[in-house]
Image (cartoon, rainbow, N blue to C red; front, side, top):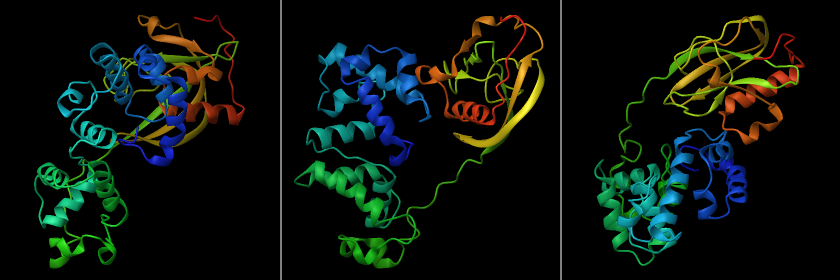
Length: 306
């Protein structure tokens, strides 16, 4: 959960996730919808699916016990080099390296140049007494002392061994990587309710948020599917939201369908907004529903329900 997401955001999700899936077998037996619903709001939903798939492999191949060796860990879906090193060193005391942005920054400054962070971190951890404490300390050093800007070199416990500190190059290393320019999009979201107050949702089939439930939308390159034809559109509000490298300006409308849904009826479903926690959906859908509710603009369709 902490990959790509801040600690203060993760904590409440973490506790709810463990309450819902208290063991590896419980997670392994869960459906995609159950896992993604518990993850909804954290983004990067492939992480949730891979976590469930990894749990299934641990049950099938390792009798429900997480293996302690790097080679075995790397065969589990969703576990890459970083996660394998974290599990092996922190959980099992193995001499395995962990390289995140903080560690890469520390090693670049310590050795005085950009280079193979993994080789450097591996050499360092192999010579330590406690891999568990060393790896966590190295990450904390980067997070709290050897920061990207204005590093606290006088307070650093390894400043006498640091080439960058000795040469006055701490601010220069590591060299910044070019950032991908964000795409800016404008998307209309339509809130269409039946007589019960259930909201029309569309099941996404594209690569970005596959199997997630979305509100019907206007023309956009973010989601797949044809936009719905709507009438009686009334603006409820607007907000901005970022999805990976996309900066999106959402406009939220209460609306009615102008005709029946053709050709793709199976993609749509009427869902009670009170039960959204039970279905997988991105966090911006929740924002739109809350805006709709708070505005008092709930719009009930009077025509025959599809």
